[in-house]
Amino acid sequence: MKMFLFALIATMTFTASALINPVNRSTNLKYDGTVVPGSLEQHFINVKNTSGGSVAIGQVMVLDLTADNGFSATTSTSDLAAPICVMAVTCASNALCKCQKYGYFSAALFDAGPAPATAGKKAFLSSGAAGYIVGKNSPAATDYPIGIFYDSTAASGPIELFIQL
Image (tube, rainbow, N blue to C red):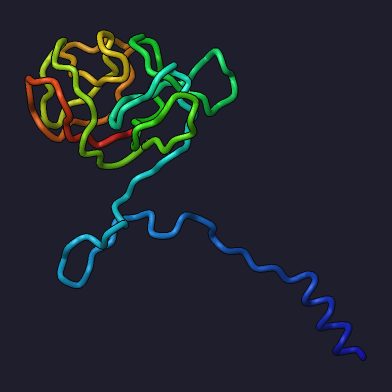
């Protein structure tokens, strides 16, 4: 009986902790040195598109300050808007969609109007085209960086970016 009580008390009082994190979040390599599919380090969130229309893959989203709920997002041309993610899928109006906050992104939408993109330099939110990124020769202190350009280009269109939001 004494052993039964000890086992019962031990079961109730001893606890074990486990690290609970997403599995395969870090990039892993196969035996031949290539990247394991699906292991590329990328972080995503879900946001509700409240921009009033469909949002394309690669557009930068900012918090919708009129909703005050923490998940509604829209596109903006305000230099003061803080970007929260880059849309990973085409997102219909008022839909909940996958949006990327960190990692390699192959097709961010670039607006070449203000300045060309320079590989290794920071990308910023465009003040001319809603949801687009730009290069800036002299960024202001109020400009929020979105990530780092992988490529150099002077033409508008999709561009490779490492997102750091």
